[in-house]
Image 1 (cartoon, rainbow, N blue to C red):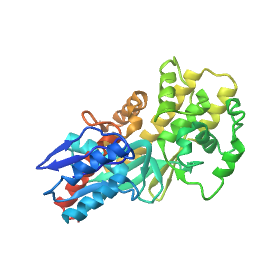
Image 2: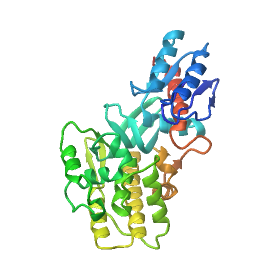
Image 3: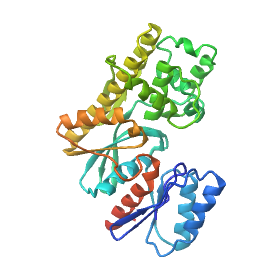
Length: 349
């Protein structure tokens, strides 16, 4: 039994080579949703193991721990983005080594930091982080996910004039937070989209998850051409890092100069797709992998997914994504269950 994560929670029961994935029950931080999930798990019996997220403070992790203790079975904690990729492998019945590109808003990393723009090499139940977006401060923690302009300030890092639409906002206070060693850093692709949307469209506040990114994708859909934007792919000790800072600086300057917003939004999508695809291609070449998996909520963005797929297929790689399972966190339980089954087959308790 896999317990998923707290937001977009689902449960998954894997048995005899099949998996039963529940409907998405919503956010189990909500007491009614929590009670519903807890009741299902309380009635669960005769299982061989429990799988959950790596984050120790999630309700779903605590419920999994209680279930494993009650039934005296092993518990398997699976890193969030590993589970995203594994969900696609489970759906397609793939057991070969793959390069997985997982892009979303947040997942607890194996180093304890906030991940969200990742390249992993997945071989069975094992996962190695081989690339990611540049870590940047997340000023105010979760507040940065509700106020996209904060992430714009973080990515610009004082290297460009703050856009005029940020006038009246406490920019200097946020810059000060960014320079503090106490401010957590993130590699989140979702927060990078927030930064770009804040710069191009002036997004200050969002009322639902992904709102700023959706607005940026819609803007890009109206583009007849696109603005060329740079990114830098660095490598250190076999781990790649994609730095999009210069792209956001140029976006800021282009907005100030009055360049058309659709072309800027389209240019951002092309830059990010090309950069992440190049990272995956290099890792696949080094590891002799033939398949790249695209997973995570950011791939609900059709433009990003199409452009990355085109880059990867031109390099001769097979590209897989979710078809039946949810694209976002609703599939996490399926991935957790798949990893746990692989571990149990190999006796990795």
